Amino acid sequence: MQVNSGMRSVFAVAGLLLLAGPSPVHAQESAAQPSSQSLLRLFNDSGRVSVRSFVQEFALPLRSAQLGVHWNNERVTIPGISSPAGSQEAVDAITTASRPIAGNPYEDFVKTRNEITGDLTAGHKSASYYVSSESDYLAQQLGATFDRDFRDNQLNLAIGTSFGWDDIQPLRNAAVQAPSNTKKTLHWNAVATEVLSSTALLRVGVEYNIVEGLQHNPYRNVFAGGSHVPERHPSHRERRDAFVRFHQYFENRSSIKSGYRLYNDDWGITSHELGGSLSQYVGHDAAVTYEYRYYTQSKADFHRKEYETLSGVDGYLSGDYRMDALASHLFGASLRVDLHGLAAGHRLMERSALWLNYQRYFNSNNYSANILEAGLDFRFR
Image (cartoon, rainbow, N blue to C red; front, side, top):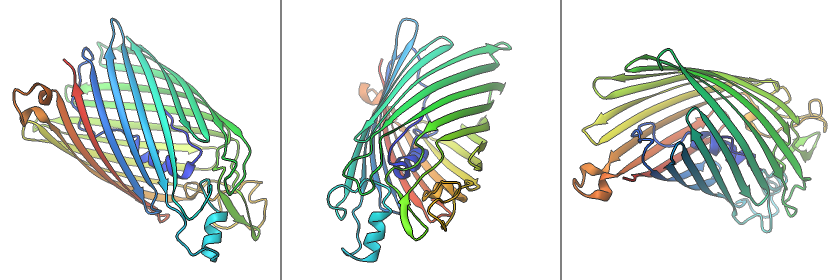
């Protein structure tokens, strides 16, 4: 499920790190019983941007299907400009802002986003609807998947598609005035999952996206030709990637997950992502997980550190560091505890599990972030 936002520099990075979901060590819930999961996410980066996200998920089995509902309330706080009023640093911060500076730019800017996803699964088919709303951005998406089992259920092949349409209405009182716009995304994927043995699983897949419309930050200016001009990215983008993942369980109640992803688009960006995690039960009721991910990419064809003319490169200009060449690292550790071991016989505790997760992200473009997650799972009986 894609998450879209007018504040590209905040939500895209936060989404990349946070939407991986809860701790990799997760109890397998029965599809035949309702379940609920609550999650609190706290994010802060080297620019002192903070994100508080509260997620609530429900799974409800029906007669011949299952209904899932996901709700996320996200509050983003961008600190006000700290440089003295009238100084060149303050002027630069305002004129190249990547967020709407409404009112006093020296005060914190706060933005709230709400998203809801509903998905209905019946046998080998599923359908979903997603909507995300904030003050200047409305995103919607419809999706569908279909899968089949082969070779005595040892091989599963799945295909999926989705179509998203976004309505972008930049705030009129922002420092950078931008017109209303739209964006549409058409997505396809195909995934094959092979059971290699009773303890090993292999998954390979490909994805393809066509994106049309506004794909830059409508609030960001770029320094070009001796002045500040609005950022502008191409309105068309084709994105494709292929991935492979391997999972292995060991008799000492540990498991490893490893994966590689190759990405390429028609903007000139090619990326490689390699990562893995190790999970280990500690006693009967607790498990720890350690993870690492390395990512590297080339720059977009139109990205430059400095632009000599107002027209940039073929009419395109970018102040987004994610369009530049970069390398990044992500380290993480998590702890999950089934609470029934702490209070045997207590009906509420027997159905609950608590987990904590911390991640540290940094890249070669002088950007870093800390992500802290706390979650509570509850199983109805």
